[in-house]
Image (cartoon, rainbow, N blue to C red; front, side):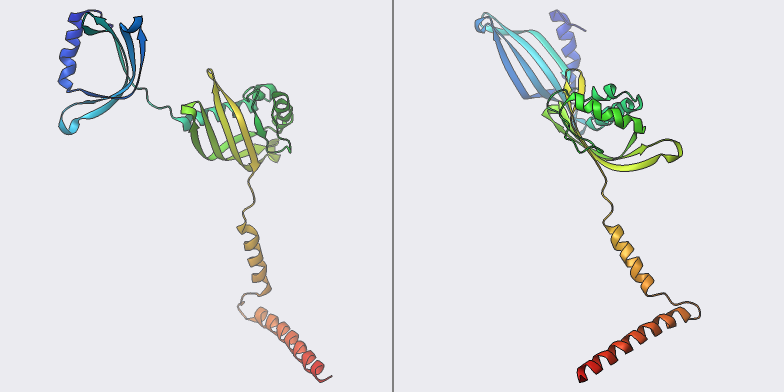
Length: 265
């Protein structure tokens, strides 16, 4: 209801006071009108409601307009609303990534480029040595890239929020499928996006993508395998080991006699 009279106000509070409400202001400000005869008091408050262990806090927003009537202050306007839940920025980030990925599927470089900011841009693409800072260069890059039929899938990600939700960093790992038909191949890469809200729209102000480096453990495993091959395992009849041992024995014997005769020269 939009309450406009005393009777309805009293009726509302007849039920509300039974909830045992207790309010605490957490943030507020004041705007003065009519040379101090009235003011707007607005901000955030937390109300505790309920009985005993069932008592629970409710975060809300408030706006009061108080006006002086003779020696007394009276409320002429009161608006209270439950604080909206904080948006799920990780879901927002994934939704924006999906919008970017869908733009790639159009194969229209202009559609993709329009998701990037027109100024203050820092774009370090996966397959370009350039540091792109403007819309024209962004579109030029995607003119070639969309022809590779790219399709990205996030495999690991996280979000850091800035400026009270007006911007965020979305970073992690994604896998891109590139190419045609049977020649299509996956490419594992790392990504960092900074998205910023401009009015109702989200725009990319930073994008850095790089191919995932090879696992450093792979060369070590290969070397270990080579060492393993140098010393064959025991076979059923032991023949392979004997041949290897005999070869090494002959080498050691030659080295021994070589050193011995050299010492007598």
